[in-house]
Length: 55
Image (cartoon, rainbow, N blue to C red; front, side, top):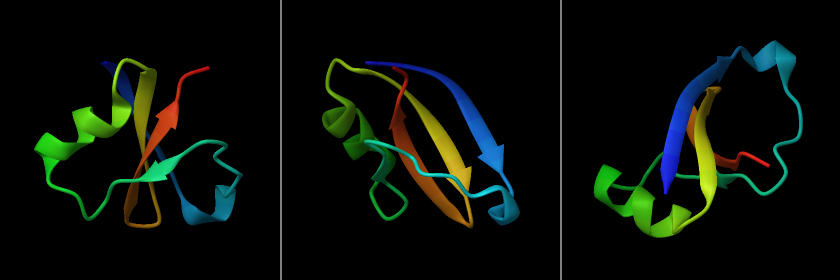
């Protein structure tokens, strides 16, 4: 797993996050388990954190 960047977007710029997983309520040590060996980034939106595929 490689996490490159944390992107932030205000709610007014909502767009679909294909393949995104809401990881807001998970402990930080569980996030790598979900990402496995995929290239991903974290995106913060509306007070929630999403794990988003980089491709």
